[in-house]
Image 1 (cartoon, helix red, strand yellow):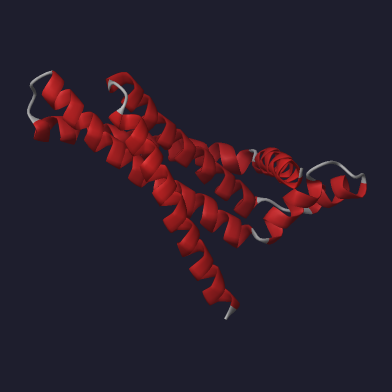
Image 2 (image 1 turned 180 degrees about the vertical axis):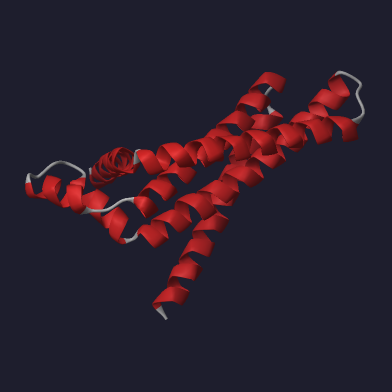
Length: 175
């Protein structure tokens, strides 16, 4: 039953996050030029790569050094331990929810940018679409491949930094 609740929860959050990203990117892309549209695509790709790195870092990290930090009351160490104890959920959320949504959003933004390029420069839409989607796919795949190696080699640092960010967010929400 708990597993089903987790699946429902993550599906619900994916739906909400996708709506928010879609609305924001639609608003931004409809009001901006080509350069800003390309920057939006790069932002989505970068977010996907970063969250993929976090998910892999959490999944590959051991909690041992964080227990030592927690005994010395190092800020964010308890958050890091919680992340590692829930690595399957954290990894799923970071890699699957955020990562996949960013992939979809970069593709969607790519279609908008393609239309702008094709109209502005009077180019064949299909050819521009092939080039833009191929660039998006290659940057996403290359970025994630590059990030995986960094994530595994620096998993403790990445988990700790992510835990610090979450601790700051949590603290600011409580205020």
